[in-house]
Length: 141
Image (cartoon, rainbow, N blue to C red; front, side, top):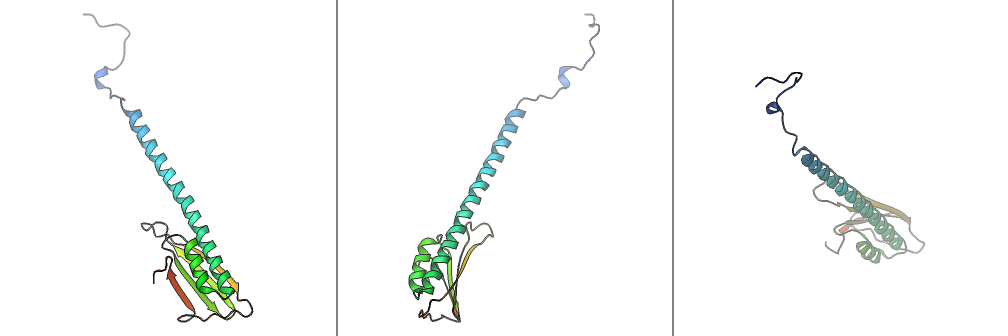
């Protein structure tokens, strides 16, 4: 059989097949999109937890400034994320509240909300153990 004139090229035996390349690229793209969506949801959740900590700290010091620190702790425990640490510090005529939580235990990230208020005239607060009283939310000692 005579060779065909004018045909220059490689045989198809030496070519690598591209079959499946699109499938792998699509799988990697889906994994990347899933990771980005998970990070976005985590950021939204962390933002919401931060706002809840700030709200809880604000209510804690507002009620403490009125002379009701126990009620303030109870309200803050309801507003704070689960497992948050609630602290109230009284120095002179100033009350400082701090609510701290870790949204994901596997990550070393701590979110803190802090608020300060001046005690109202007539409000008497006794500082506990050096002026600082910290308790986890939920009434646990």
